Image (cartoon, rainbow, N blue to C red; front, top):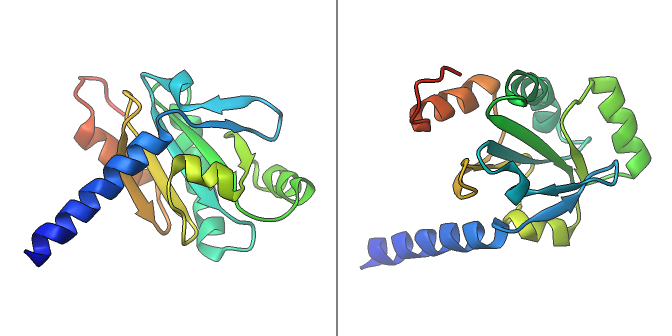
Length: 158
């Protein structure tokens, strides 16, 4: 009974995360809306991070490489900075050559996507807009690409 209760709780959490994020609309630092619905047909990786977070800083080059390799084909990365000022995030993005859209995160914007208790935390949405997986902790380009290869049902190589 205990295992069933735990499993049902996890399932409900996944369903509620998916439902909550289905219509997320976030404004990036250039004032452009970033809507999950606008990326139908592509994978969307939403990454919560902070400039003071060592694992976040370690994954930035991986996310830049991932975004640059896939943005015109099958995946987009959206970074949500959960700290600092617009100026400090913009300066950091310039220094680290971040090419993906950045959003200044708030509790309200985070709640549109999912629960974030630890940084970095990432949510990966499938081409149909449904939440496929989430990860607390650092990501690598190769781990994301391996997941995409496993869950992509086409002959197109990543």
